Amino acid sequence: MIAAGLDPISQFELHKLAEFKIGKYDLSFTNSALMMLVAVALTVFWLFMSTSKRSLVPGRAQSIAEISYEFIASMIRSTAGSDGMKFFPFVYSLFIFILFANMLGMVPFFFTTTSHIIVTFVLAMMVMSVVVLYGVFKHGFGFLKLFVPSGIPMAILPFVTLLEIISFLSRPISLSVRLWANMLAGHILLKLFAGFCIMMVTAFGLFPGVLGAIIPFSLTLALTPLEFLVAFVQAYVFALLTCVYLSDALHPGHH
Image (cartoon, rainbow, N blue to C red; front, side, top):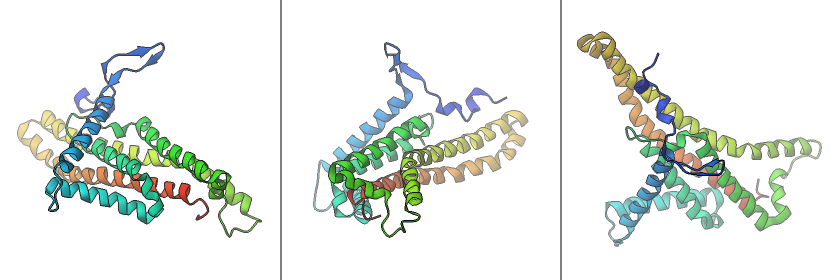
């Protein structure tokens, strides 16, 4: 039986910090909501501090902010074209929020909001809502060209169209599950290996326990920078796929 402090799943439990209900709806303020607010606050603070003293010769903070701006801008231009720059605030906000949320989850005793499927699914549905609403607003029924690829023989066109519709409807699922699963699995592995170190010392005493803990401790050290990389890559992949989906809304016939 795993002790409560070593349970790798306990780190994902929601805890109410302030209870609040409207009728049967529970709107309590939780540790997940707190970390979302912290991520937003840190983002605003970082951008404010890095842009408040703009200069031709940028300092370190301004350079990082400019690099992040150009990183997302080039991503949008390469996937959705110059027309996609109208969505820059949306994509940039998503990327920075997910990145900060992922990185905060790496701090000991902090909560990883993106390790909950409901959070990542809401983000994915927000992306798909923008895609559908803008696509219909801009192209009307022409948005349906997205499901009818050009150059397909009429004999197999209904089958291909059905596959395109299924693929489109599965996008929010794949988008949300990818982020959720990677953050969940990585944190579970880190907690398991770190827990093994404590269990070895507790079970076998200080000297033999420390020797036995060398392997799980080494794996923990090796996985930690890898998990930081995963935290960045997942924010990047989410933003990149958002750009690809927005490209479909901008150019539904170019498919």
